[in-house]
Length: 256
Image 1 (cartoon, one colour):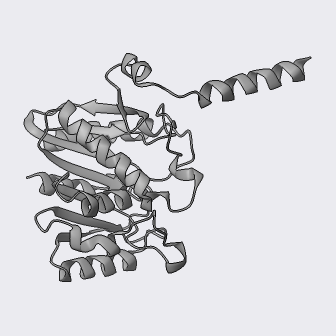
Image 2 (cartoon, one colour; image 1 turned 135 degrees about the vertical axis):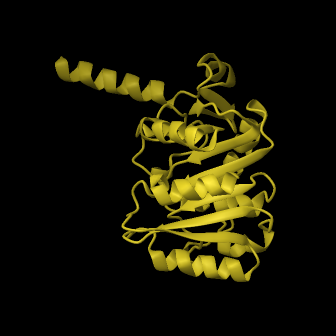
């Protein structure tokens, strides 16, 4: 009997989690949510005094269900103080209380950060955040997969964001992983606005996005005419690379 009840509650939980969250349901959740591209996205916003500007913080690949805002909300709050600009940390589909109506979490498949579906989703999300918070200039702060999607967004929608802090990202796909539904910065670099300000941050102890990979992309992008800066976070590994002093200093410089 106990076993049957346990199975029932597990089934009920899975059924509830699988339900689509409609726009109306999302709007009732309050100011910490926004509905875009059929997804109800959980966010945390911290106000700054500067008008017309917005910082958007986008995380990388974590285990599905991770309370990502528990980690990134304090970082967003700190950035709002450091820059005096309203800062929003978002939880991608499948993280914190964000839905997975049409998109899977980054952890559910390989190279999803390179998918056109995710880039289109981010494009819609950034556009709606700009309207919601009356911003005409956006600084995008991305870590790992969030960095990868950010620079791909720059190449897809060149004037949607004005500056990019890209910490520990990936910029190309192996030939065997390329497909018509995926894009990478190396393939669309000619589309990136030369007015956009970009800072590439690498950690000297990062084994996931090694220094060599970031330096090689920086050199390539610089030769292509991008307005790009390379930032070294001495002693930093992959985890929390976007939160290092080197990264925060680079963000402050980007928004000036």
